[in-house]
Length: 163
Image (cartoon, rainbow, N blue to C red):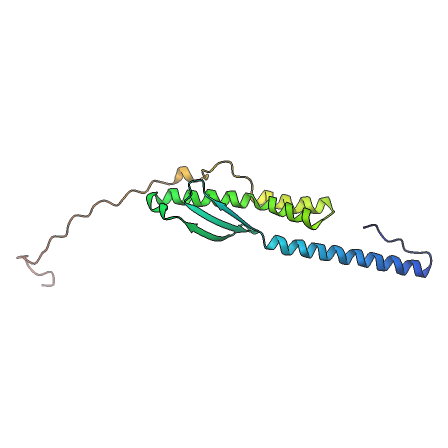
C-alpha cells in the first residue's frame, strides 16, 4: 500500500483519503484473520515410544493428553520424560504453523511476519534431544520396602495401655 498523496485539488485529496482508508481497512481485516487462525492453531504429536499422544495450542498449553495402557509397564519418571519430550516437540512446531498462516493470509510486511514467527521460535525452540534437562535429576522409582506383618496382640498379657 502506497502512502496517499494529499494536496492538489479537493477531488484528488478525497480520492486519496478513500484509497488510504480502504487499504488500512483491508490490512486490519487481514491481521484479524491472521489472529483468528493463529489462535486456533493446534499441533498434535505422538511420543517416539508410543506411550503419549497430545496436542498443544498456539500458547503452547496442553490441550489434550492421551496416555497408552502400555504406560503401566514403565516408571513414573519415564512416563513424565516421555510426556515432556513430546510436548516440547509439539511446541517447537508452533512457529512453523504460524509461518504457514502468515504466508497463507498474505501478510506483506516482512518485519511484522518475521517478528511474529521469531517470537514463537524463541518461546518454543527446537528440543535438543528427547531427554529433558532435568531427567538426570529424577531418581528411579523403587517400590517401598515390604512392611512387616502386623502381629495380632489379642493375646497380650501385659498391662493395658490405658491403665
